[in-house]
Amino acid sequence: MEDIADSDVVWRILPGLTDYATALAEMEAVAAEIAAEAAPEQIWLLEHPPLYTAGTSADPAEMLDPRFPVFEAGRGGRYTYHGPGQRVGYVMLNLKKRGPDVRCFVHALEGWLIAALADLGVSARRAEGRVGIWTDDRGQEAKIGAIGVRVRRWVTFHGFSINVTPDLTHFSGIVPCGLGEFPVTSLSALDLGANMATLDAALRRAFPPFLDAIAKANKKA
Image 1 (cartoon, rainbow, N blue to C red):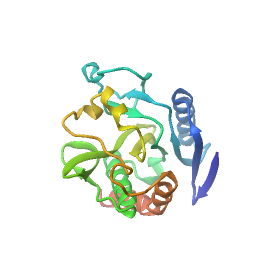
Image 2: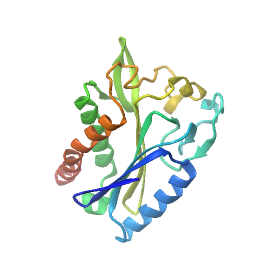
Image 3: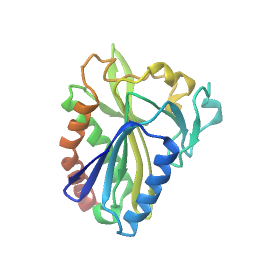
């Protein structure tokens, strides 16, 4: 495990595959400590073994083939997949300090991922009426990143995932985020030559503007 202090936010980069239930329990405990001002804000970057998670809006009809373990995540959203080759980011920030506006936070989070992907040569974007981060793959709109967050006592947890080199066939066990009409893509499928290390570096470069975006949005509110 690598811990890096970034101003007053601690980044944890976890090696190997992290057990989902263990990560979820620890993340909830850390979020409670942050709310009590007993721990610093944190960003975790990790990978999970193959699994599906169900958000609070998950529709059982969208679980097509439970070939992997299914976990109740407690975050917003529907079903999503996590697995090797996918960078998962857990974002634990104190919005009492950053600005108590969940919509501003989610919008800024999307902008952070879009900026990091642009750094790697991906023209990514939001899509009106659809969650996640989108790009074009061989002339078709495809999803490259997912977002699902929860906020408790104004502390955020859960976060995002970006597909780097996952097995994209694993997504066929669910209707990803309830959007079955759109395919899923990855950095490797786009032939960009990016890997976890280059993505992590791009996320770190785009992180200060992400925090600035939260602050600016709340000043305008």
